[in-house]
Structures are given as structure tokens and as C-alpha cells.
Length: 236
Image (cartoon, rainbow, N blue to C red):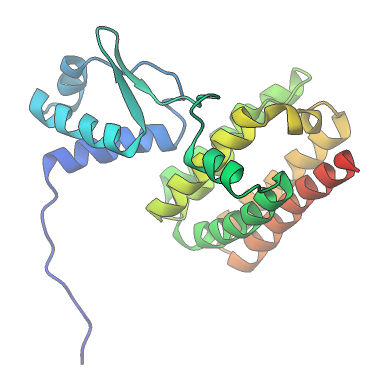
């Protein structure tokens, strides 16, 4: 009987340091534009050598997740309206519309929700719960910003346990909520929309917690479909 069992390889310390910092960025605990701890402070916090931290940061620089500014430190990469993201450049070169973008987002996020229902661990669920709590606080204060919304969807992408899914979704949200923010900002100005969006998010997380992939996928489909219809009506 072939079980395709493979030898377990010990993970390098530098890989663990890289994974930990990358996770903080992907989960939104380190946000675009945030200044990271100095190399020495990171090394002390992680109880590793400075060369280990330096190696991890260089990998993050190569991925475009952080940028080093001479004499100022290391920062989480923020959206640059002049340079744009890879997605921003692709949108321009292919003459694609926001409608095209949202159609692709539909496929990516529905798939992520289905995978998250099967793969999410306790940390993933906790991250989603925290994002929901933040949304509730914003709603109680009479608003709903994009930060909590982004954190929620990125938590789902992370729970899918697919590194490409995570990177693609981060690019999507940089573009959606920074590059074309004015195109969708009206979505968060209407009280009825806010209530609808919050309920949709609750339906998504409930399905993920229940480990129901089909229901999670359907709940995400309903949510993204709502955004698509809002945009299409707005552009008529």
C-alpha cells in the first residue's frame, strides 16, 4: 500500500522568522505603511540572531511586502498611486474594467471561503472573529470603514492555506480599497448597505465555523454578488 509518506524536514530558523513576519502582514496586524521594529528588536523578540532576521527581511523585500528606506527603517509596503501594484498595471495594460475585476474576485473569494471551511484553524477563526468585532464597533459608531472589511477577507484568504491565494488577494485589496477607493466608497455610506454587508459577513463566518464548504461558498457568492450589483447600478 502506497501512502506517499515523505520524510519530515526540520524547518530553518530563518524560514520560521520569515513566516512569522509574513503572517503579521497578511493578517493585517502590520498594515501598509507601518514601520517595523528595528532588526535588533525583532531579533530579541524572536530570540534569534540578527542575521536570521536580516535574511527574513530580505526575502520580504524580494516579495515586495516590505520596503527598506535608508536611514529611516523598514516599512510594510503601502499602495503607491504612481507605481501601482501588479494588478494595477495589468488593469491598465489590458484595458480591464472594475466589473472585470469584481468577476475575478467572485471566483477567488468563493473558492477561498470553501477552502477556509475545510482548513481554518483556531488562529484563523480568531482573526475572523476579531475582524467581525471591529466591524461591529465601527457600525455602532455610525460608520463602516474598509480596514475591518479587508481584515475579514484577508483572514479568510489566509485560512485557505494557499500562499498564492493570499498574495493575489492582498493585491486585490490594495487596489480595491486604495487604488479605486472612490469608486466603491458609496457602498459604505448607506446604512442599509452596512447592515446587509455585516449580516453577509456573519453568514460567511458561521458557515466556515460549521465546516460547511458549500454553504461558505454560497454565502461568499451572495456577498460579492451584492457588491457587483451595487457597482453596476452605480455606473448605469
